[in-house]
Structure formats: structure tokens, C-alpha cells
Amino acid sequence: MSWITEIPPERAEGRLQEIYAELRAKRGKIANILQVHSLRPEALAAHLVLYMDLLFAPGELSRKQREMIAVAVSKVNRCDYCIAHHAEALSKYMRNPQQLEKFTADYHSADISPEDVALLDYAVQLTLAPSSITSESVERLRRFHFSNQQILLANLITAYFNFVNRVALGLGVETSPEEVSGYQV
Image (cartoon, rainbow, N blue to C red; front, side, top):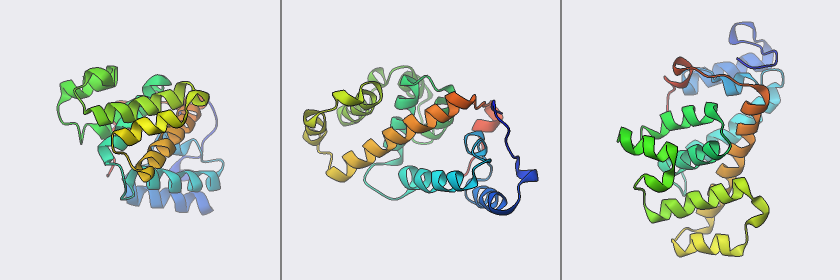
């Protein structure tokens, strides 16, 4: 599943066992990207708190927008693991398979709103050249009527996926069609 030793659910004890049980209850199964944290249960717990807040908490951006950011950032970073997982999640909100395929290849060709293009352009710029972000980058989002809360959430999701992409790529976290599907929303 990765290039380092992991503790599978059937061998988990103590705090890790509790975290795995909570994960199964909430999501139905344990993703490889989370199991790779198994040698540091408290890091896994902290990761989960951030993940659940950024991707699932009620808030300023739609689930579709959040998943679009996840896919766009992961595409730029060439993280096949995260692209597969979050394109699958995005398919629940972008129901046209051709549009999803276009989006995954290049969101500019996917017939999404100009607001969403601006949001994703910001996420990609932050990913590729963080020091190039200026007040004008944020003002551009405001011109598309994004609030400070929405801009903050987009920034946090972008930063989160840059982190997770590096965990997946740096540890060789593997995926398969079976591993990608079947999660509870």
C-alpha cells in the first residue's frame, strides 16, 4: 500500500484502533492515505479533524467546489491517488461523465462557471507559485463575489491538498478501483 510499514486495521491497538473504528463508522472503510499515518495515530487524528472540517463541514463553498479544488490541485501536482479519489467524489456533483473527464484533463475546458474558473485559477497559482499570490489575486476572487470566508476556505483546501499530495507521492501510497470506491459521504 505504500513504501513504509503500516499497521492494518486487524492489527491496530489502543488509540489507532479507536481511530480506525471511528473512520469505519463515518466513511465505511479506511483509505490508504489515512492508513499510511498508522505509525503516528495522533497525526492521523489531527489529519482527520482537518479533513472533515475542510471537505465536509457546512460552510461557504459547495461540496462540488471543494472537490473541484481537490482535483485541480492534485492534477497540477500529478498525484494520481488524490485525482482518482476526488474525481470519484466529484462525480457525485458533476454528473455528466464527459464534463468530469474534461474537468480532470483541464478544468478550463469543462464548461464550469467563470466564478469556479477564478477559484481554481487561484488554487493552481497558489500550488505552482505560492510567492506569486498578491492582494490582486484575492481581489480577483472578490470581483467574482467570493467572501473572505470563501477565500479562506479555498486557501485552506488548496494548502491541505498540497500537503496530502506530498504525503501520497512521498510515501508511494497506492490506490486501485476498489480502494477508490465505496466510501460513505
